[in-house]
Length: 565
Image: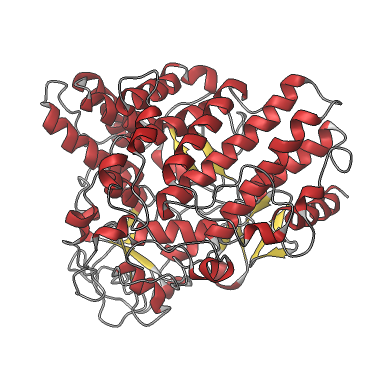
């Protein structure tokens, strides 16, 4: 009965948040649906469901990592739109960047619209306490900020909706708001969330701690630290981003109010998480592998995660199934070789693989350098140069002329519950959107920039110490990576921090955003030669933003396309 109710509720929710052609969603009002705390709680859970109710996670993860120097598409002829993305030869109609494969634009705005319904209606509910009204609104503001932060970094100026769209025609005539205005709104939403969210979610995970798929004060603090880190170079990076306007540098500068700079703001908010980690329930996971184990679900290291369930059955929403506010994660199949039943879509670059010390446990978790197949048909292993006893695959990725690029194992080694949908593509592995480790890296980068190098290196050494642990048995620990000297120069520390971002968070969709905000996208990507083609990539200055999806341009008369597209 509970599942039947949840299915019925989600169907109602999706109609309210997504189906702009049928029913004006502004009709959802306290005197209509929102009468009790249970009514609002159900709608809030449904708001989180919009993150997983389409193939948006698949598109986002694949898109931003393919655009980096960490990952390459492994096949030219299979779905060539992925290849064009890899080569920086994409246009607004590209199936991923242009929306139709992943619907990331639609998914973000669906979540935003749900959030706006809650923000508009929660304060009007007289049947619940003021504290509860503010908590509901704070969760919605966090989700609104979370989605706009993604949109504004990917597409720049986008339409900003501060209230539910009551008329479908309104969405078709809404122009783009400036990215600077959107950043101001993001900061305001996150500050409200920080003031009104609980330290920990009340719901408990199967691991005995609070769930990480609900917004909390710590998640809002961490995200705001990341926003300020992004804004440290905004006025420089985006000075010539738009053909139709000049950027408002003063507005970005005004968001530093109360701090000397965005660097100081990033340190402040990151330190709020670090100094209060016990109250928030955060700590580094002892075993790096457990961060990517679907059977374990969430981790105490997660600030905020996307919660998936792999074996559920129910109505399909944009090609994925859901149960309540959970959905299925089809990302694991991307990294599994075709020879073993996966899609073999993407491979790591050797540049990333070679950055790891051989003794770094994170390398073992992140990659598979051998793939065991068919006991009766030995194959040559190009990584070792040997035809070892049990059968080893040569990293074919569906190609005849195999190249020695390791498989990406981080998301596929322990997928949890796997659904028997074609190719075993759906699983219950949760995707952390932000980890405590990332907060340490934000603090390290910002503090080093401000000359506080010794403390910055201390944060890096916490991560490197964890990377030496291979099990709960100290006898199994590695001696590498070694601790860094707290006496190193600021410039040396900056290089070490830059590498640590990549080592710690590989394939967690951070690298491209870091390349853009550090003004190094062109320099780094222009040196990159995808292994499957051997053709150098030729990025252009306008690639710091992706195009507005063509389908949105066709449907919305007021939109102006980004420069270069």
